[in-house]
Length: 60
Length: 245
Image 1 (spheres, rainbow over the protein chains, first blue to last red):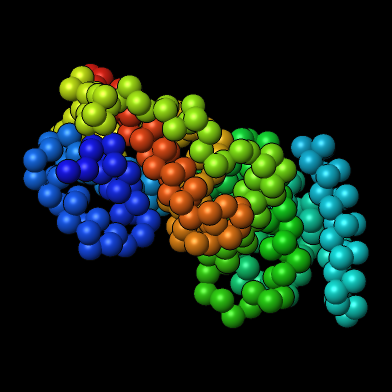
Image 2 (image 1 turned 180 degrees about the vertical axis):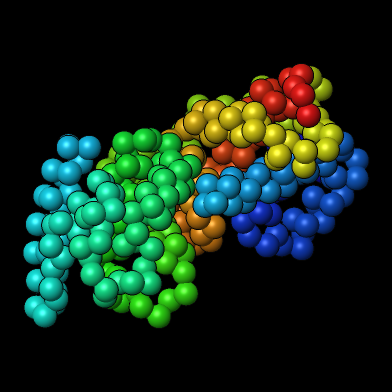
């Protein structure tokens, strides 16, 4: 099983490139058993959302 | 303002020369129009005549407003007031120079912003090349977040990412944005640059790599570090703090 360190890196890359099938499986499997990483992923999603919002606000 | 005026006039000289080089038939704008960028008094802008009637750039109020918007946008990317001012000057200048090509486009604002966007990308690239920060992941950078993990590289229980509750609410909170900007400022220069190209300019990783001449794996690393740091900072400075929602 991959470590949280590796999985968090993959979760970041998921925002920049499509993961391979194996990587996707590793992330999904890991997330089932790891609260820390699933929270990390939703934190990252919020950061992306905040960036979009910041961009929108700065153009308003 | 006087200082800026002088700079503008210098730039006009430069730009008109360039324009002559590339296009002999181009008529350079008289400096009086350029000065409207700074001293946007109605008297001056009226002189601009009827050839740019539909352009809000000829209207003093909308010019001042668009300048303010451009600066705010540039600040988000460059995190440096002086740099932002300069780049907005250049942008408005380019907009004035190119307003003949504008004509059919629907939104003047969108067009001016697209000029600014390009200038920001160029500035990122130039600064990058100038500093040529050692990117290939130096050892201390790689270990920056090791305290978050135990020896087996799983989360340290005390640093395990927490649930952010209903984070949507935060986006409506003005204080959240202050913290957000502080956290952005905390990023190292190299990861901030890559992060802002990716998240604010919405470039693809391939485009960023091409602009900055870095490898994709380098780019993924830098983006990862930026997100790690930003998340950690928001966690500590916002989500773990008491604040009125």
